[in-house]
Length: 126
Image 1 (cartoon, helix red, strand yellow):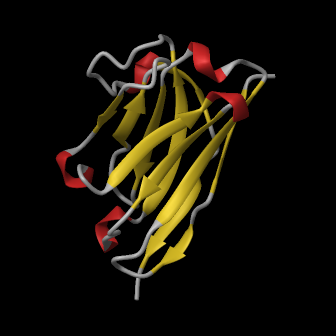
Image 2 (spheres, one colour):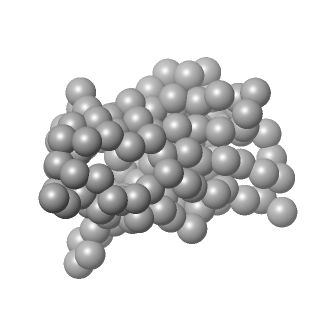
């Protein structure tokens, strides 16, 4: 069974950090690009970052550049999202997803992703 499981979410104060993990099972992660998305209440889901199978990374949107870093450990079949300097507007449910390709190709269109995790909640509040 193809599966992605996110973990690492929680409550953090503004300015704090969290590291999200996305563990894959049922397939080899290093054959695919992996993306992180988030959805805040009342808002559409948006792409946050994508990492290709060759470990090149692209971050979306501009609001997270310089604060979020995506990485992968193929030996552990896991992708990470390091989030620093968190802001209240970063609060959302964060999802990871498998792209139907090895590369990110500059697009976070959801239709390019075929396996999704269940999401992990990130709350940023004092």
